[in-house]
Image (cartoon, rainbow, N blue to C red):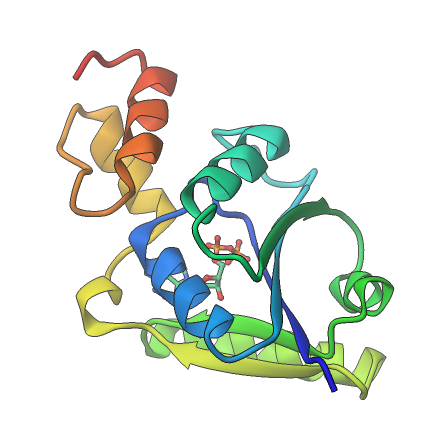
Length: 162
Ligand code: ADP
């Protein structure tokens, strides 16, 4: 049977840490849908359309990856697209409590959807979209953290010429 997984997140913007999880998960599941959260409560740097476009550009060489925007309840969306697994990344102990709470809540809403955690590669365990934005806003070098096409778009947002 085909196993489809969803990797949800804000991806504002996608980092090399996210990309590492995407490649590893795509190597395990038949299809990996990257679900870009259209979240009204957070004010993102990039619109959901821009985030989807960036993710499609940087994952275009992985044939079993699809990128879609979604809003509302994650488990409902997972059901809608036929995904039985939710993929999340764990960087450090600080991620654990929140991720545990989310996965248990989702399990309570729908026991048919499993959350599976991928531990971050040590190389990226300190990396977050927020730190990338902070470094870029001060004109710092973000090339070790994001794909070059993403770096260009982040600098453009901050009006920085590189
Ligand atoms: P959210 O707002 O849902 O936390 P993010 O885009 O920040 O969205 O993260 C999406 C997922 O990717 C989360 O499971 C997060 O733990 C994971 N993640 C974020 N950064 C990294 C990283 N550097 N290495 C591995 N996983 C990461």
